[in-house]
Image (cartoon, rainbow, N blue to C red; front, side):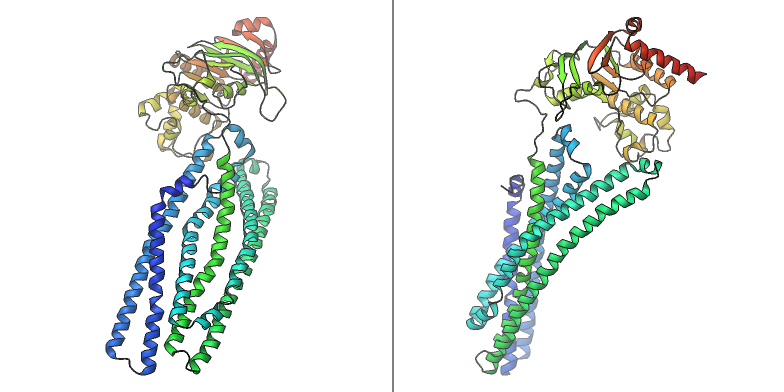
Length: 581
């Protein structure tokens, strides 16, 4: 069903549409009295019976009709057009909310530019269908019926039938060209999606483009998608260029028939002059609903094409969601345990983790080291259920995480990811992201722990400083530390730091770690790092190699093993010595 995702929203505003349609019908009815008044006026002039008082009466009546039409036209706009705007608002909110429920894997195959195109152009096209599309359907239908009825009863049946002969060709033209318009509009939307994706990527990667002096190449690449967008829009414009002039030509041919035959009837005294004027005015009124058929076809076909595209996204289901009997357990202990975990990312055959087992007691710190691609970040993702393993191999507080509500898992965990994404808003709002009502004291305390408070105060606006896209006006180290402050501001029970000190110098790193050891001593921590200096004081360290745990123990124990860990440690000691020298 095309409207399956809109049904609830449409029912919400059904009375607005009911009253709006009633007002459209009343407005249409009032419009049809004006030709009759002018026809009577013409007859009075023609027979010489027009008086001064009658002139004032006609003027008054025309003014009353004009005011009535304007008033009810205002009302249907207030009801129907406003309802379409509300539907647009609710649909956009539903669309965005649904995207937030989808799993991470969905965003690996759907670009931000594509989703932005759906959230803008497609939803706007749907709104147009429910706004002026509905108005034109009702208006053209009732106005056509009312007008034809008045033409038959007030003027002449034969003249009416002859004048309406060309009209069915309008419906045929609209039907034939409508399918082509829908197909070409889908191509236009796809082209818009491509150009949005290209622009979004170019702006996000502008520093890389400039660093490699690739502006000219990017311009050429953009020209290709822009040309494609232009060509697809021109194809659609050509169809519009055929449809609307064709409708105008057909409707004009009706006017030619009316003028010719009606004029002969007036000359032969078979039709009063007033009725002839009235008939021409009715035919003029009829021109709009006939033209509106073309607009209706255009707007509805675009709306249908866009709604189909939106439905595809709204039909997508989250792979990771609360299970039917998921619980929210009060006072759940922050004990983390992995039991013989095996994991392979979707759509791949290469295992990322094999037979991984460890346990982190409450208040203890586990460190994870290893080369790039050995599955360190995957452990963090699985812990927060950003991805799911096939078996119940991960426990939190002794409970398999699949039996816990996602809300509880993610409320318990404060996470600092590798990419340190910051939003284009105030520094204060970035730190208080998990809870906008966070007190000033907690925000400052978290910033001090992350060793970034003094630097924030150094900005002209302090905590009120607005950040550029992805925090572009901050250094890498500042972004990392603000991300750490954001993670600990809400006082989580579990803290996961994923290579989150790589962009700070060793002195600052040492200071932050000392603060963390003091301030979050009661928290369960998982620290993922490449630097040995970051994790040497952890309660336990595991070394991942070829997707398995190759070594485990404390720093001193692993150094004595003289294995992978010690090899990495000695290399870093040598690097530090060279840097000092």
